[in-house]
Length: 429
Image (cartoon, rainbow, N blue to C red; front, side, top):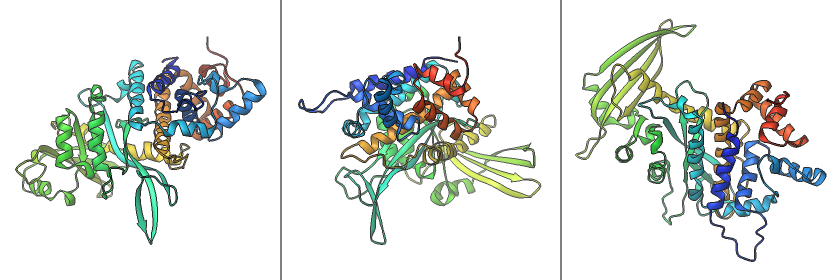
């Protein structure tokens, strides 16, 4: 277990801030740096505390010191308006590398060893997520929909996160923002965003040897072809009704089969796997050969099929690995339950409007929220003091209550000292 990983993550964010172009005119106030604005905004999401900066300003007035300085290394706290103004000008694409840099730090501390699953690679699940909506506030990049004469403007992102079967902690990668702005009438969509994600990030994340997971929307020839050409693998949900050519091919073919039976503590479950190699992804001269995998689970006592799903993949499927392949395909739901749901409903308030801005503030606040979530995931695996503090409190919601209270009412000399205070323990040697 490691000490100092939190400081490394913050240093990475600060370094990234220093590389970003500062578009302020010479007449503007340069008292506050972009790096410090980023760290202040991150602190709000990291501690799930919208009023955190106000409390630290009050602490500075009373004690002439504050925790944003001692823990986050921010010499002076900008106002909320100044933070939004500075962040609004940042092009999100120029910021995205900080996610990869954070994962490289995590790799140094052996965090990613527990996520390697197929041929030494990781699984990256992709899914679209809303993070802002309004009937009044909007920009040229906003998507929109009209119902009963009323228009709703919204932002979404194609989120990506490292997942693994049986692993409850997920680790976000840089997502691809979905938005208008190219002057066309047609709105942007998840499929286009997936192609851009490959264009913008395939090389960046190649060291992870990723296998992409996604729903039925992604199991199409153009996207799968680009994934293969980039040296990636995929396991995508493939529904019968939306892929009639594949369904017909499967129906008229002999499939390999494997069955296993297990006791789950209450019932006997029978898992039936079927797979077929060399399936053309579409009925066209220009096509791609994939492997079709099907799984159904039957509850023996009830005589009922409780689960069934099918996927296509460019991975070689055998009797030895079909169980693992199907398990990895099923892990796609983790981006919905353990990423999207947590970010929306468990303190991160992803859908809250933290400020739209004129250019990129809304997008940047979303990315900083995801970055805070990533930091918690990494720390929960690699920082022993963080783990001990987390375990000493119990429930996740109570843990964040403790963090907020400790940040508000006491001054701490360091991140490690802060965690020692949270768990109510004596300092480590």
